[in-house]
Image (cartoon, rainbow, N blue to C red):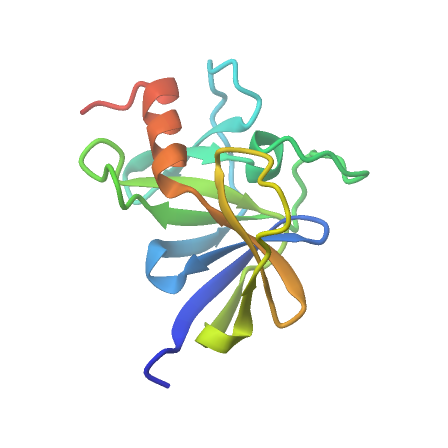
Length: 157
């Protein structure tokens, strides 16, 4: 039990999830209106209001270049996961990621995770590919994500 970690699996595409420590997920909320972004990057969908903040909302699947037969239209079954920034919280305390379904809380033991070193990482936003109880998941490179969002959205320092 001492090595157990409470984690969240966030569905980002059909058959694809993000794995994050539960402590990084500030809140999961239902889809709400998205303010359009002037940003030319298609993976930045716009911004959402949350507790007085306007947070950039990203589509991790679009960012990492995965294309599936799943279209990227927003659906009423989609959710938004608000994530805490860990590397640059003074510049960007939070951002949001599109969840294609309901994120799942999972207790993870050291023996539950298998690292897939044989798979080549396809994007700088992915730190590792793992499987957990027969589910594949991406562990995001939070430093890369935060740095990109700060530079692209012009969030104040």
